Length: 106
Picture (tube, helix red, strand yellow):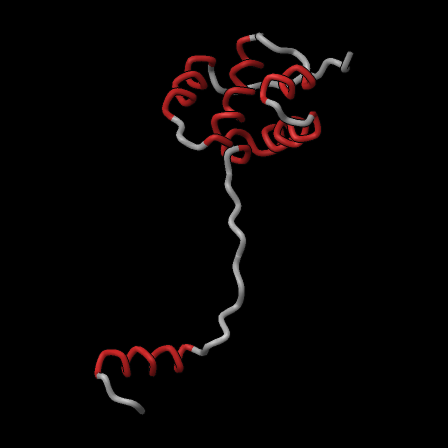
């Protein structure tokens, strides 16, 4: 049996349920579902949340930590990789665009 944990969910049960019904992203839905279960008292252990969602307990712990530190916006934040640095200079891109528009070579 896992140890009990305490977390204060600032959103109301109704607000979480409404967001759950309108959310499209699967990852957001899982996180909102977790908060709704906790707020409504349906679950009280991280292990139970993990079983219901099919996620490892460490994932649930990480989600709850994000929520504790930054609230709902932090929990639902999707980080995007910065991507690779461009290999072509702005001047080279501008020259190529000009060549494509005019059909001439520089």
